[in-house]
Length: 148
Image 1 (cartoon, one colour):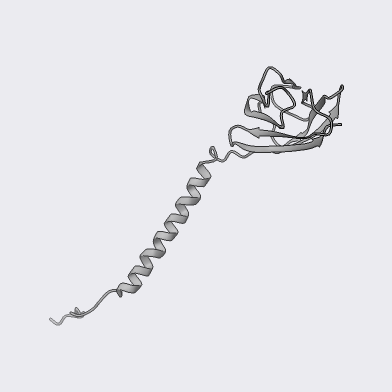
Image 2 (cartoon, rainbow, N blue to C red):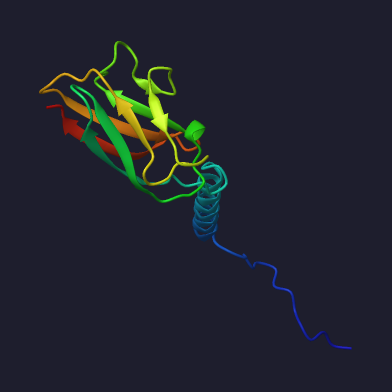
């Protein structure tokens, strides 16, 4: 019986240069896929930072009411935020929560119409109010104004 196929004795499968290029390409693709997966998981399982819009209203001398005009999430608790005012209008009290802040909420979650007050501002000083979302450590929004 005659063999239908014949083995070649001196056959090379792939040249070493092409094999190296293929290994590098596969490694780059796997690294990119892994990077995308890790970046997606590192943000708290897809948690995103809500955005907020704020306005200021003078209340009494050297005091302002900072009101939330809108917020893109209905499930942000007051314990999920930090309010940072730069420079500090209060004697060393920069950050909410603190006993020096008076925050008024309409419900358990932050929403439009909720406000807090800042006192002891200096006329002519520019203040920046930032709400930071604790789960992602990102800014929800800022308000900059000059005290009158």
